Amino acid sequence: MKTLKYVLFLYFASLRFSYGIFVDYLSEKFNFEENEKVQLLNASSNLRNQLFSQNGGYKASDEPLTRVGLRFEVTRLERFDEINGELKLLSSIFMLWSDKRLKWDTDTIAILQEKSVINYTISYLPMKLGEIWRPDIRLFNPLGEMDIFKDKGNEAAVLGYIGVLYYDGLVKTDTYCQPNLENFPFDEHECSVQFVVTSTVIANMPEKTQVFYDNAKWIYFPMQPCDLDLAPSRYGQEHNNERRVLVFPIKLIRRPAYLFLNIAVPLFVLSMLNTVVYFIPAVPGDRLSFCVALLLSFTVYLIYVAGLIPETSNPVPLIIYFLVFQFLLSAFITCSSFLTAMLNHREETTPIPFLIKRIVTFFFNPCSRKIANNYKRNVAQNRKLDELPVEDQLPVEDQRMPKDDAIKSSNAISMEVTWKRVALLIERFCMIVTFIVLVLEILLFAYLAAKLSANVEPTLQSNICRTNPLNSTKVCFDDVSGLCIDPSQIPK
Image (cartoon, rainbow, N blue to C red; front, side, top):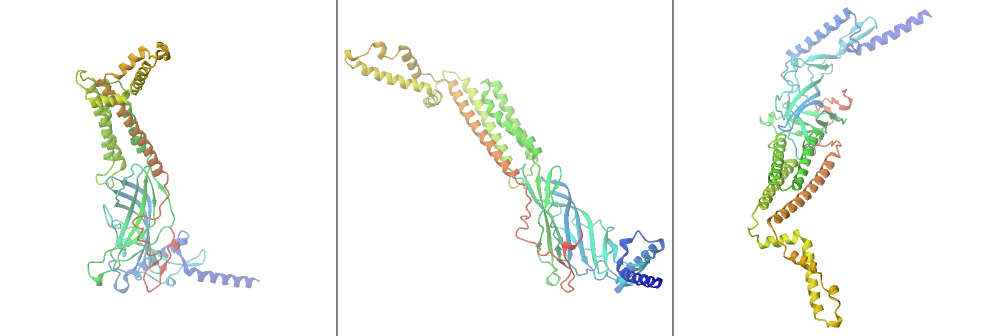
């Protein structure tokens, strides 16, 4: 019985021993004894020397003839300057590429762990980016540094035993974005981070998840990426490597609450005060000073909003048109107030043109027109009564128009039109026009605000990628070896 147990123990130990050849030491790197750690470090150093000394020495400047897989994901929006079109992002970038000069046989390396009686090997080896060849990836729409690896020589990439390198790190990008402020402060901007390589082809690995990111000023989310063809190399057909531009679009939506409360609401209050002007007594000093104060207020807001919008904005924001219109309307009200003040103080001896008298009589005093018409009708009726026989006529007090009414009607017909009545008619007309314009402005702005802020659903397809879909969803390092990697199988 003891012999059987001993044989079974040796059998399973041998199986465990043989299986342990293919177990990477990184999975148990904190469970090794001191002497075992020294063996691992020595094996690692020997492996590095072997890799960089084979075939006459490894040169980082020699291109390994490989394609590069790239996955780019926005981590944080650091700054978006809609005036200068500057977009600063902190993003995570994951790349993989193949270098057949840096591969080894894991069966040749075995470090025994006495506690578990398992042989461990080295399947992955950390490598500094400054020591190996790395893809020449640059920003295609930069505002600052183009080379994203300029200060990353000491960062590590992971080298697999089959010669595939993986890099996962953080990069800061400073790129240009054409702002679109047409619907300010309900504006949306479609920006992109574009990468280009000069020596290899980039096969994009798209990120399928759709995530909303949020900060105090903007709501932003990534859109479906794409890769674009780049112009051929200028060195001739024999040096015309495949070159592509990888585009990672991002949508930014402004939070409008702050600007709405600080711009739109005060503008509406000032617009309503434009109508209140005509309810102030026609005292030149009071009304004119109020009109000038409103005009200066619109001027201040026009300057303030113009400072938030770039001079090269195309198209021009609708709020600028609104402010200019309000400024002109306020100027019109101020001019009308000056005109009515001048008319109120004009000498009554100055003759009034006949056309103006007719207009004032027609619009200003419709009741007088009604009384005058009744008077003419009664006069005609009295003439008919005078032509009837005496026996058919009613008593005089029943058939004649009262004397007081006749005098009143006569005064209504001969109503005197003064300059003050002309000024009052102009005030009423301007007040009605201003009130109608104010109501139309409120309805239009409410409609636009509801329409622009109702839907913030993510649009997966960007304008730049609408006609240029993604060419590849699988990374194949070359067309011969058949070594391809499915992006869905790559850990994040």
